[in-house]
Image (cartoon, helix red, strand yellow):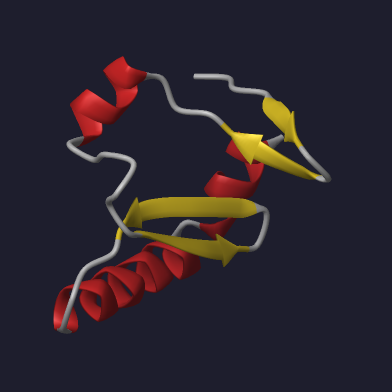
Length: 75
């Protein structure tokens, strides 16, 4: 899916339509965790406790193991 940034005052925003929010089960009030991983930006509902930490650890392992493939996909 390709999305474009939208100008919002002096900033830029990534806009999610209602259908995408429904599929992701989030709303405008859902706190989101934004993580930068190299050239990737991960956006996920903020999780309390160890769930977020487990996700970050798992993603780090995947990124390390498949770094070349992920780089080729990014190009």
